[in-house]
Image (cartoon, rainbow, N blue to C red; front, top):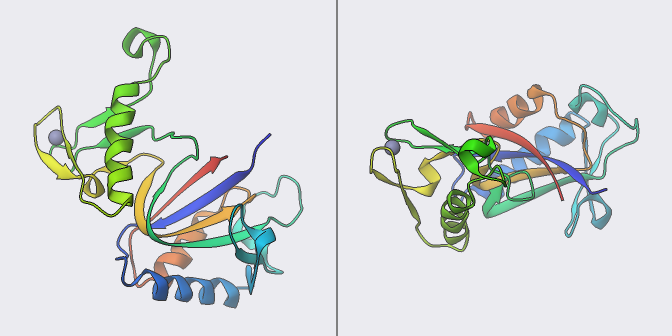
Length: 195
Ligand SMILES: [Zn+2]
C-alpha cells in the first residue's frame, strides 16, 4: 500500500515569481473545471491542496478506480520532485551530455543493482540546494563543475514551483501544456511517485 501521486514542476520559475505563477496555474485549472478554488487538508498528504473539480477526469487518460482523486497541492520554494523514495534514475551533465545512471544490472551495479555512491552524490547536492545554498556537481566524464540545477534528471526535478496531484492517476500530457501556457511558456516536466 501507499499513496500515489503525480507531480509537475516548472524548471524556469524563480523563487520570487513562484507564488504568483502558482496562482495563475490554479486559476487556469479552476477555469477548466478540473480543480476547485477551495482548499482542504483532505486534498493533500501533510498539507492542504485544492479539491478536484467536476471535470477532474479530463486530466487523466484512464481512471483506475473511477473515484475522484484527493486534490492538488501547490509547492512554492526550492523543492526536489522525484518518485518519492529517492528514485532519480539518472542525471545528465549540462556540459558534455554524458548520462550517469544510478540503476542497472548486477554485473555493473552490484547486488543492490544501484549506485549508492552516485545517488548520495546527487541527493546531497540536491538537499544543499533545497536548504538555500549553492551546490555543484563535478562530472566524472568531462570534469566540468556545474550547479546541480543545471543537470537534467530523469524522473526528477529541482524546481521552485511544483504541483503535486495526490492519489491521481497518470496525467495526460495536455495538463503540462495547460501549465506551460499559464506560466508563459516555461519548461514543464512531469513525473510520478509513491510514498
Ligand atoms: Zn560532463
